[in-house]
Structures are given as structure tokens and as C-alpha cells.
Length: 209
Image (cartoon, rainbow, N blue to C red; front, side, top):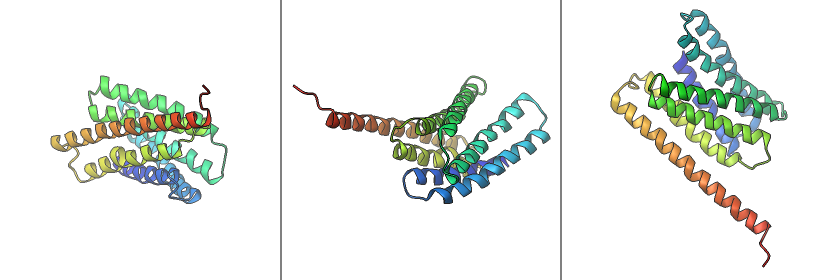
């Protein structure tokens, strides 16, 4: 059930990225957010109830709520054309929680792939915080980050698990390098954005000799 949820999350983030890139209409994208968000709020309750109630079972199943609530909140905000500041502040809270997950996967589970994956998710939620609480024009930039993450951290891992090859050492190594390559790409487009903003400020506020 969790793997199927991962696949559906990939679909939602893919559409959300297209919305930010100006390739999809808001309300049509919001519908899928609401459907998948509802499923990913309902399913963790079942998983928690049927689990052994250990802290690690709750830790694992509780992570699904982070995605479900985000999709529901985002879906309602876009569909009803609401002010996004609430979504923004919720996103920074989730970003901090996701960072804790990354630290736990590194320090306790020694799992490099999940460490990098949760770090990337934390970064994406942080970007949604900036998008909804500041006047910075980040739609295209965040759309690019979300597009990459929809495949690298959600869709591809889900497909690898569903086909039974995710545990293969060679596959895991390739997957990890894909995550690292994604981080390098994020660094590149971030540098390009910073340089572009500097040039724009220079044009609008030239230094007088």
C-alpha cells in the first residue's frame, strides 16, 4: 500500500510541477491533489491501526500523512483560490519534520538513499514555504525542482519496488547517483537563478558614477 502511495505521489507532484511551469490549469491539477491527498490521509490510519504499534512502525506510517495533508491543503488552496500563506507556513513545518527524517535515516538506519531523498523533500517543502509567504518569483524554478523530484524520489523508486528490483545493489547504486545528480542540477539552476536576479537588479538600479 505504501509503495502504491509513493507512485500516486509521483503523479501528483508531476502535475504540480507542470502547474508551476505554466503547462497545466490550476483547478484540474487540484482535483488529483484532493483525491490522492484524501487517500494518503485515510490509508495511514489503517496502517497505524494494523501495525505492531512500535515507534518505528508509527515513524514509517506517519510519514505518509505529511504528503497526504500537503496535497489536500494544496488542492483546496488552488481549487478555492485561497490565500497561500497558511500553506506556506505549514510547508516550513513539514520541511523541518522531513529534515529530521533525513537525519534519522542517516544516523540510525545508515541509509544513504533515504537520507538524500528526505533531504530533497525537505528542500522542496522549504521552497513551497518561500513561494507562498514571499513575493519572490520562484514558480518556474520550483517547477523544475518538483519535476525532477516527481521522477527521481517518487515515480522511479515506486516502479523499482513494484517490479521487485529496488533491493538489487546495482540498482540501488544507480538510484543513489541519480539522487546526487539531481542535487547537482538543483545547485546549477540555483546559481543560474541568483545570477539572473543580480543582473536584473543591476538593470533596474544601475550604479551612478
